[in-house]
Image (cartoon, rainbow, N blue to C red):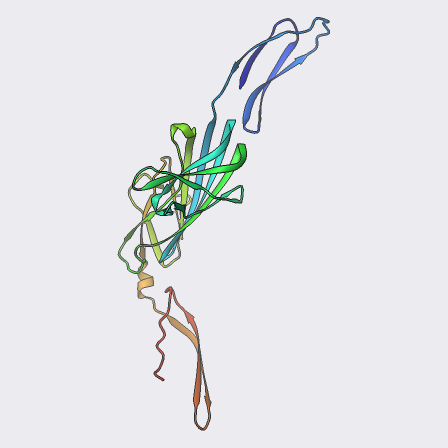
Length: 274
């Protein structure tokens, strides 16, 4: 609430503004002028509605077969404490009414529950907070996804990065003030952005990292990924090899040790017969 006050019969006002636990309030300080007459104050009140703003940052680690995503939600809750947080999640994270993601509130694990399916692509989950929160609230969400197709050629493969967003319905009183996503990948993979609402942050992008930004909400990021030409032409290199053989009158036993360097995710070894 905000109060506007006047000194009716005495005192020298010295006003200031303070903020504590998410509340912004006007502080009225009065000095005694030595008058024996008691001061009278007149004021009117303005009740402010709950207001929630949130900034999103995230990191997506892209590998040749999997994609893992970690998102951080920095909430600022003003004027009235919040008891529940609603999240808009990709439908791929909801299986048989079970929410397949890990959620942490101030580093404490939480258990969100499915609220409703908004359309064929997204659903809303609700998380009840252990206690009412006001001011700064930190939320972390982690989820992993297998790629529908492995990144195994120089042909560009479109990849959708599923993202979780705060629900921004009128009831939630929530506003997203910005989203940033860093896509991390190794030297064997090349990544570029696809056309859409996400734009590249050239200053933050660099080798092995594509930084994306958007001011819109509820939209997954789309990128294109392919193997670098050097990764396609390179082969597995055996730097050292040891061969040991044990012989007896009736048997032979062999042992082979390889020291290998490769950019592939797996190595095929052909064993002799027998």
